[in-house]
Image (cartoon, rainbow, N blue to C red; front, side, top):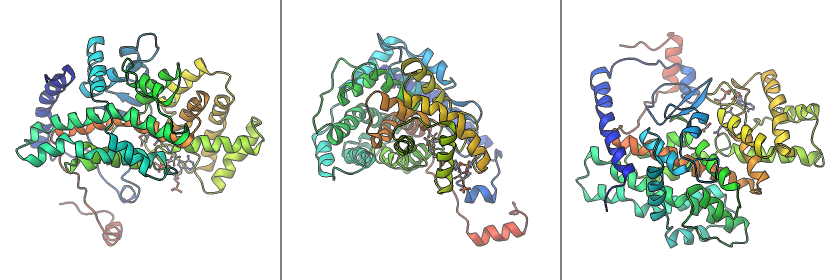
Length: 442
Ligand code: NMX
Ligand code: MLT
């Protein structure tokens, strides 16, 4: 079969980019761009500049840019689904992969390509059905992805021998596209198996990736637009977050995309990362329950926030390791909600939390960033449109995140990035260097 336009464009882009990395590594490999202190060693490697990606960049004040464009610029630039306000996720995938905005025909070719790869093997359904029904949806999602490892084109070609380093991006791309094509159907199967009486809806071959997900979980318009917006917003947040970093780290051992994405999804399942979106809804529902479904006053809300902090818990959806302002992904969802659900009581409550929580967190004095992140808003939109099973929300995040991390590992192989292996030190060493006022560098 002839290569798609996307694959040909990607090849051209990777080959044009590769000499830049080779030159930097060979001629400027010794140039210092950061230094490391003891606090960073103990504190989760925060802020250490040691990863390279061109797919997205996170500025602490401005927030994310996908391939150089802000969120509004990205949404404005991409081809829209006919009759919808939102772009094709498939066009966004082209954009992430190549850095170029696709034309409508290029976008439609990706739509077709993903459709042709979308069939989920029957054994994946068997795996999902064999696991205890009360397994967390993220455990089901990760298991389904891992179960497909036997399909890996990368693993097959590598095992056969003779796969050259510069050609490794090709089977990684094939695995990534095969996986991406199947994720909406897998996520929808999990959703309907767990929450909709184990009744299932077949994909509609006329629909796009986002629209089909909405259709397969049983949601009517305009939820298709919610799904498209949601997947794009959650796709990428540069390389250092747990899901992106884990996917990249595992792939750096030349593990294939199935092993790598499954690992990344496991990282996303933590409450300090992607699971925060379900925690936010749980927290809000808890507040409402305690008040017999009455909307709290600002004073009551303040008290709930303090009670949460005083019980040693974090305020879910607030704070960030890099951002120091309101997350533009929160802003994008807020704009959407102002247009589509302005009178929804939970939306109004989210706005009230935004008025109260930053002050409480600032007074609490611990977090470096008292502003909301993406997860503070996402559950409320899902709830409004009827997706109320909040332990599913992180799977939605995961389907979107796959777009970014799989693009990243395809490029990782294209640019020949090395196996990741930072150096460890011992506590004795840290104490010695602390007493000496720093490690003496040769
Ligand atoms: N509520 C209470 N305390 C907080 C919060 C919060 N929302 N955010 C940070 N802190 C605390 C943090 O636990 C730490 O305390 P300690 O010194 O006792 O360990 C202190 O403030 C300093 O933390 P920071 O340097 O501000 O944040 P860090 O980079 O370590 O962590 C998060 C970033 C996102 C993990 C953290 O802000 C958090 O736990 N937020 C709530 C959970 C959440 O919303 N996660 C989702 C993030 C986005 N995503 O989708 O992944
Ligand atoms: C993400 O989208 O991955 C989160 O905001 C976490 C992060 O960037 O550290």
